[in-house]
Image (cartoon, rainbow, N blue to C red):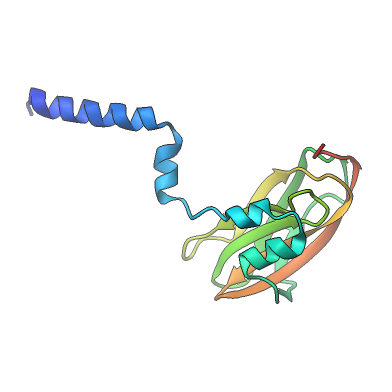
Length: 152
């Protein structure tokens, strides 16, 4: 197959334009809309309101794995699993952080509702996890003790 000069130039110019936009351009095209209000909220109630999760129901099907004591609040590992069918998202909130909403994970149809990350925590606090399934919110929490704060 012969590639014509014009076709080659079109592909090269397109690739250069994409490279100029940066590595995040492709990811942002398919990414969910950023919850700016939620991530800028300074109170837990504001973060919950931005998620629409004011009346979340406690559930044993939302499993939170985090250390009882974290020596360094700058790197606190957390794993979350939702065994609730049709889980669409998982949000993590650290109650005493300056900005409580830590992360939101979105899941496609049929995806396993599991998330693992590391977060910063400023002080000993409850960590709340919210799972959204079929437009209802379910919650679980766990206290994590911090010996050295990581947000300041």
